[in-house]
Image (cartoon, rainbow, N blue to C red; front, side):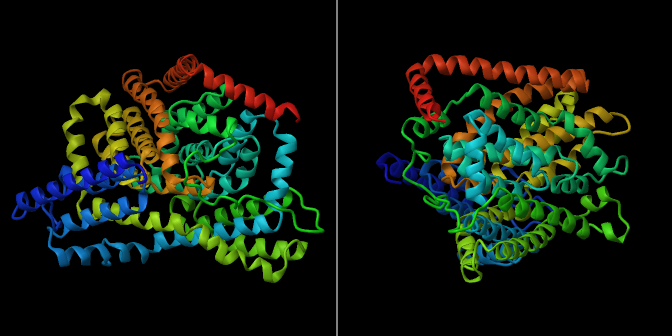
Length: 567
């Protein structure tokens, strides 16, 4: 908070927060508890979403995510403990909803272990020459900025098994490629984030398919079949992928992203802001005396992908007689990814020892280095998980969502659009698309009778999935947003602020598309209309931006000509 205005705004926000908390403390001190099983009168009310909103607003004001997340957790603990100081400290640290609970949770620890494993593998790929070899190959074969961006998207589509794995792996592979084409770290983070979750959401074989199939518990329809049927109706995810293609080919940038791309191309500044995480970490060097090749990067990545698929279906009972799809639906994704990551990490060690590109002693420097690279994402994730625990489990935000949806239930044909907006709001406030869809999917199946209204029920599920991903994309406390920043080596809030205008553009088109879907209810016609609307919207934005920032565009075009003149 170097800017004086920022400090003043932050202090003013803290003062307002303190006053509001004092009011809530007096107003709800002896209020009755409305939700059975809850321990706070805020449960099931709008105030159940207050802690994450505090964290988000403070983060956007201060541009500092650690203190903002911690204060959000503190507010959640205060409200849960009814503002009793000692009980608040116990709740914040405690093993029910607090930091200790989230750090001892098996799922969360599985994700943390997987992050560390990928950090170690990424450092091994660097030391062993795999990253340098791929960067060298890409410089020779990827000739334009558009192809570099589309390759990032394509790689993200190929790694469809899990969004966490997608974010970190695509970032590690594509950083040297995008850097050689002067693509800003914020743009790389956007490409990673906007490919990871949408691709996993429309891939029948992924950890997301497994999770959503488990959320849909209706006796009327199989959860996995329901997931597959919602894919062509999932407008936010499909249109996000279409948007990446269009803006890459047409070189369209706007909002804060335009500044980042201008600085990257004209000033050769990939970061724009003073915060430059991992600066210098991508200075790849080939091992002395050894010729490296692209296979030094691709083989370890392929082994990790195959190992993760194998371990995920193993946890789902594939080798006990379950079908492949059922095994995915029943898999323990966190355990499977951690186990698969361990296999891939051990293979990478052995591969580079056999290749002789890295010594035994030097290879183990990657263990602390990989962990250090993941400290920031792990810290942010821990706070985000704690905040989500207070919001969802301690204060029963699901009950508030059910009530809000019940009030909108009379709209019927317009209900998918309403579900999309509610899902987006919950996803933004809680920072978890998985959690949001976990709340919304059973409600959707309960609101619509699949035997009577199968199409509306399918559209409603797609709207819930779309809304969860949209809110997750915009939220600074989202786990995938955090890991996209880490994968791209981008300052986290730079990624958040540059991505929001793009996400809101897709949101507007998706919202209109869900309104039309509820009325027309024809999958082909609606998908064509949605795609046409998306392309038309982007072309209009392009015309406006190029007219408004003509000088900036001219400088960027000139810089691009100079960059490619000698290639």
